Image (cartoon, rainbow, N blue to C red; front, side, top):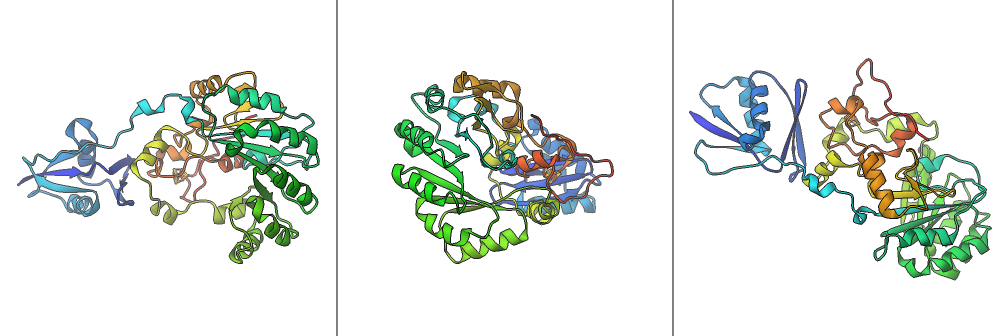
Length: 392
Ligand code: SF4
């Protein structure tokens, strides 16, 4: 008897070689299956847009594999209908019109103010002070931000290198007061600079994020700084994690983010950050976010960084896309035209051949810094090699 097998509009079907993946973006469930017997033929027909996500099935003449596959589909991903059923479905497809460059895509601008501090490359992964002689002037910052008038970036991050430059920082705070609610200052918190940071936070009433490295002096400091902002608690190993975990468990601090940092601690990353099969199985993405993964890098899209020398980046691990002499419009157009970080997709290396290509989180700075494009523990093919190297 002829029937119609139809996939729900919220179901994604992906095929890679001899394997397939079904993902239901409203129930957040997925199932892998092997392509054997007539399953490949059914999938090809389902994926043909003209067939409206359906395929005719002769139910009296089905192999065991196909029967199991149909059972899998009807359990969560689709339905069997009468051949003349008026029910139609459409595969979820990305609407490319929404990916045009627009100023409204801009979600944050991060200014590295510059100054002397301990040298570190952590800024390539997370917001972290840079060590430079040069500084950004508040005049240049304001001029640059004004190029997006009448609207302004929703979030403006200012990263302080040297808290002792009190007069310089005071000037910046005064000049940005017209946009104060959008601004967050970032500074490394140490026992030494705690007093000065408290004064700055108190005197001008800006929001702060205090970056905390692995150091034993924080326990009392953090509790006191709590009233002035939130915390980035950096984690390089298991001891850091236990330490911050104890601190946050005891409710000593309110708003915080625990942020892993790569510093040749690859074992820690492999054990704690790399995704395993279970993590992939538990990914819960609505349709909109699956589409986003297919079109943009959701970690980088919308973020602009300005370094103390005035060079502008869509990501500090990529070449510069302009300078403070350009307008924000020009900067965004350059980024969209050159397809740098904002469009960095999982479409190369082994990700390209992986069933989880569009469910997996977008490529992150960790991958760029480590020099890989796949932070997962899926078995690697023999000849797999790192795809990315840091670009300056
Ligand atoms: S990182 Fe790449 S290879 Fe690993 S699960 Fe994600 S898409 Fe697949």
